[in-house]
Image 1 (tube, rainbow, N blue to C red):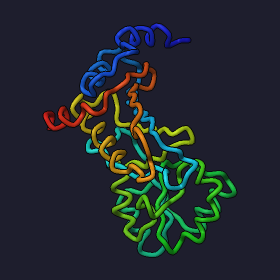
Image 2 (image 1 turned 90 degrees about the vertical axis):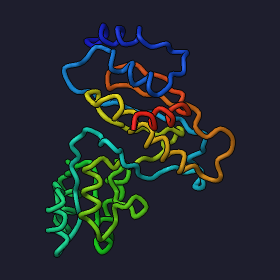
Image 3 (image 1 turned 45 degrees about the horizontal axis):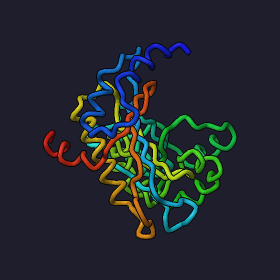
Image 4 (image 1 turned 120 degrees about the horizontal axis):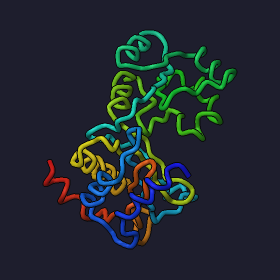
Length: 237
């Protein structure tokens, strides 16, 4: 494994049995050997829910106060004056029937998020089997089916992320880049935690957040005591 030495060096910094305060965990990330690229900082949250039950589904959006650090390509399904609105907001791909055809016939999926106006959802709905499994299907619950396409595009570009619990009861998100200042990562971390807590289903019983781990793209996981984050985030702001 080409990254073996680097990974082992980072792993020696981490006590696998310890629950770190968020501020400590983020500081550990900064101490690990740097790679030739700007690694993402990823967050994994294990929840005490049963995603097979509709009343325990956890999904929504979260806006990272300091952005994700990623260049997000946004596709917009729109027509008429909404095309210009989407373009002015920075949409990368805009279309209606032509975009649907391109996705169906050419398997075109060179985008990270999709927005649609309500009047075009009849067309876009045909792409459910293609876009759905990839998390790209516009949805009114996440604000991506809207007449205000300009606002939706700007929010996504600024760091608004969709999240959804997987079959194993886990939520995975990228909360920034290693090049971010520690305080910026801490603020992003707390924004995600606050959103996940807010989204707790009333049907969820017992311990809700059962584990939180952060890691860089090529680094080891660091277990985090998420409950110690709010005080540190407020002190950093």
